[in-house]
Image (cartoon, rainbow, N blue to C red):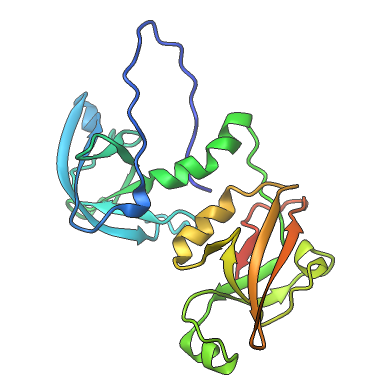
Length: 233
């Protein structure tokens, strides 16, 4: 779902390991360098800016929100690092739009860090919670007497799911996941990708003027390949 693989190598020399940065802290207009082998030209480096964040994937994938950069990325650049001026890897170059110039995309390095544990153990089964949710709208906030402007409103709960067993109902508003406020939908969805069956999660909920917390254990579900709180249709 994140278009990311982990490769083990046994080099015959001591390689230089690049530090991983924090892609959530990137700002639009920040200078970055893209490294790769575009069109077979090995070890090429191009410079550019962070043009945008949280871009939907050109292929329509709804789980990875890409960094957009105007650093020259061409076929052969995929897999190379996107580096900030501190020498930290902030993304992995991965996609281009063929009919455009200087519109390239990179997987945010924080997405990679979040799923690294799964890749190391070789398991990508994600925990099932069984709640369908969507970002709350201003109209829904007024209707539900919710004083905030950020959060995910429950649209439905599956039968016999961990969500139902935790007491979640339609129109509950999730305001935090594991004590981290939900202020960014892209980050929230990315965090869900790293949650595995058997993992305990803590949700902060708002319902009818009251804020409370619930704890749940994510479960296995046959043929379930989506995140634990699925986007509402």
